[in-house]
Length: 333
Image 1 (cartoon, one colour):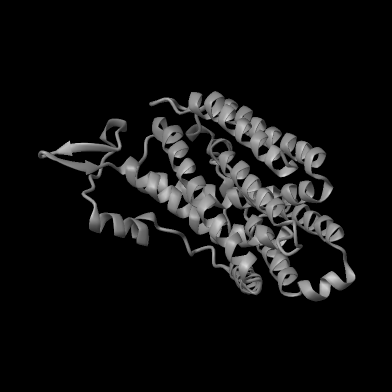
Image 2 (tube, rainbow, N blue to C red):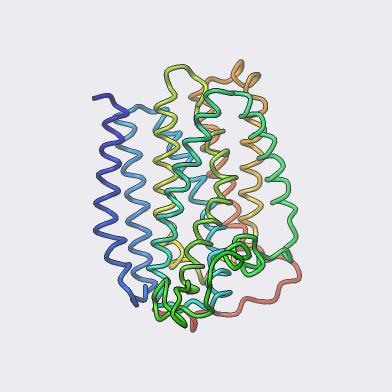
């Protein structure tokens, strides 16, 4: 058994066991997740991801381990943006808090399936047509610039999204949650509840975010060195899945505070532009900086930009915004 196969085996075993012991226990129908539980769950998933980083360093070496950590941090920071959109979706369809856990669980598991398919296709295309990485680089620079300069008034409206309009056109929908069910019968015919709609939208929105994050991860991971392709695939799969699996607990932990990270979007935008430029200039960069050092630089830029933007958001308020109003009464302890 190769080192990569051993890592896949350990990863699969850990994920299945964790899902059964953790997510399965928290997905009971009608269960409300408290802040304390969310904190413990977030600590659990982050600790598990970091423990896997140590295992990968021992089993696969320093380079793939550092690539994994960089990719995981990139995905984890982008997850905070996901949470803000998830909040808008739950609010738009008036989802009751007792249904949050189960809906998020199913939506996130669907998102993982879509991401695995997306990553598999993307990596296969890059391996066959390396020039696609340059397209990804241009896309990341454009996306980062657009994200950095985006107007705060441009707010996503779930009920005007293409996904919801598509479902409304082709599926019989009802405007209530069916008392926790995904499909019920009305007037003798099956109809889909708002909970079903929200699950599909969560998975679809995560896939939209993956259009940014997966090319960014490919810019971090070495996908060009001959003989390293299997390891690169391993790094991309594991970092993505660990980040997405931690998204549910992160949602419950940050849902009352995510809107306070005013400058996180700018921090993420800088990272995307940096990775895009790195992909575009890879030929010249490789002549001056070895791959190992490039991984360290990418990790450093990600850590500085994300942590810096979060701390800056905490201490500096955007001009024209009113003083914060406490939301503690809306968060169930």
